[in-house]
Amino acid sequence: MFYDQRSNKFRILYFLIGGIIILGLGFSIWQTQQNQQALTKRFVNSNVPTLFVHGWSGSLRSEKEIVSSAEISGAATRRMIVRVHSNGRISVTGTIKPWMKNPIIMVRMDNNRAGEVQYTHWLTQVTKMLKHKYHVNQLNFVGHSMGAYAVIYYNLLNGNQKDLPRVNKLCVIAGPYDGIMNNHKSNQPTSGPLVQLWDDAPNQNKILATGRPKIIHPEYRMLYRLRNNFPRQARVLNIYGNLGNGSNSDGVVTTASALSLGYVLRDHVSFYQTFQAFGPKAQHSELHNNNLAVNKILTEFLWAKNYKDNSASELDQ
Image (cartoon, rainbow, N blue to C red; front, side, top):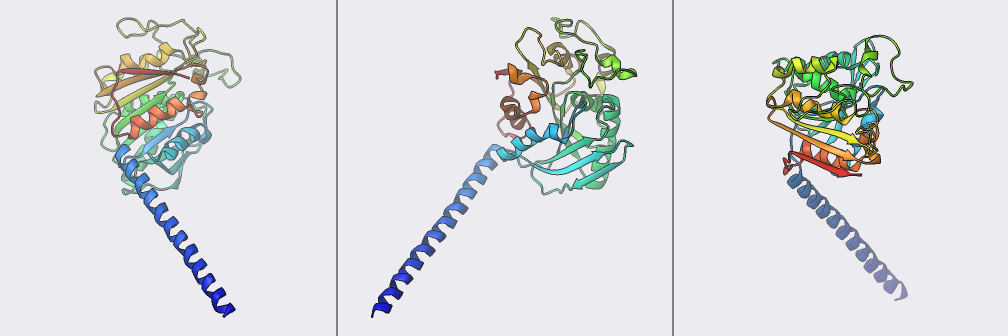
């Protein structure tokens, strides 16, 4: 009798535990479905990859925070790393498939001080490989600093060539289109033609009422000459930083240099927007280092279904 009662108690206990486990699993599945539905409503479901390009002295670590933020939001997933060796050889980790939702490709340049022109030639080889080997017909681009310049120059140089993927959206961050501030840093070149790129200073240049920069540096003239070649279907978000300390810069690139892009692209793209990050977190490197404002607008611009096409916006940090 005693054992029967004890056995019944265990049966009841096992039943209760089993019921709780089943309910927990059911709730977890329901919650996952609800989250997935919310993400489906918020973000596009596209197989267009987004190519991330770091800047001068950069690496995959430079892209890590922004990419991780996009993944945490549920908007996109990193799928491939493309490594460009110093001799130009390309190696790939991961893959791109047509069924993948908003895939991210991270690009690593081994020679990360080769300059924006060499970056552009390597990007051309990378995108050509993506087109022919992985059947990528459209691309988004994200570039920081000299990577931003390279992404713009790449599209000016190549336009809508048929043997390359067609550009969809470009998000460029802290691009030095009309000069880099000469801060006499140890990572600046001390010889060779790249020395000439460090040719700007705080409050030396400005954007005139016409939109044209007052001072035209050689690297800017190179972009402007090719302006008619830029893919007209492209949508461009130009993010720049202002420390708010009177320098009108992010400490490396002046706002005039960053905003000079508008004069190159005006009347040549379907959409152009600027975004100013303001305050201490708007420092040049901090713009890609877990900057919440930058992460948010970049993710929304690239993948949100209901992105608001404001002509300009800014956010204090």
